[in-house]
Length: 338
Image (cartoon, rainbow, N blue to C red; front, side):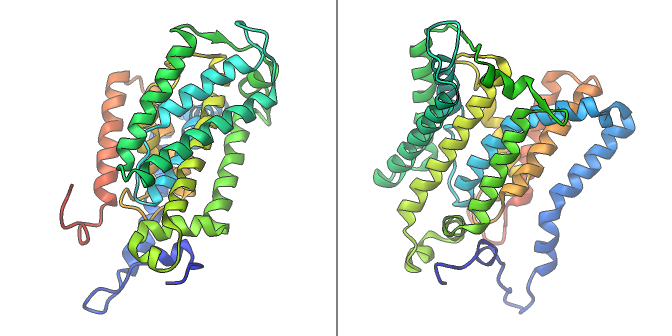
């Protein structure tokens, strides 16, 4: 396989021994999350027509913007067959750092947009460290990133000492308060991040390498793909997207504290998997992650409109991710479940 092979070609299923290629199954599979999203919207609308009001759609978009940005970063890592658990740590440290760098109620700093760039650099550095620990020390990705999760949250706690810093910078607050075509600026930033992620995935060599590693690292290495470097770059990109999620979270709440990332990891992984990206790697896309994020956001919004309690909502989301993982596993290839 050449290094220039496309992601779609890498993930293309091979014919089985009988000579029949399972084309129908793999053509329909990517559309399953879309059909679920359409059906879910139809059911919620039938129960409560207020779902389709513009104000409610704005609320859905607001609830989806941060999970989307986080999911984009996680998608790159999962496409390689790895996992990144550092989401909450990077997001928390990014949000806390931003609250102290821009105009705030605790010090005299006022870096404005430059503060955002610094935060993105911090996220990229944490992601790169994740990748280096993973490939250099040969530590499983879930263990390396789990450690970075606690490092990020621990540093955030140490910096603030359990306090919260109020953000008064008009540019940062404008991401949540200023609207364009009825939607907050943060929603448009999330869509811009989606566009960047899509270009990286489908129109760069790096994106094709992600698919190649997910299809089989040994074969990819024999094709001349620098597997270790690609893995480090994937984690670096993921850290950058997580830090951007921290910027949006701080803007949305108007403050930075050490609890701002709580619960984000579960939502992120759920959205990626529900969207159809395989945890075994090699199959999926950032557009599928968008669909997964919308499914989770619409489901949460719909349950609120139907008056379902938060505890039941969490249970439903848990069942959703179990079902999505069960459907995404190719049991013909998975002889042993680890």
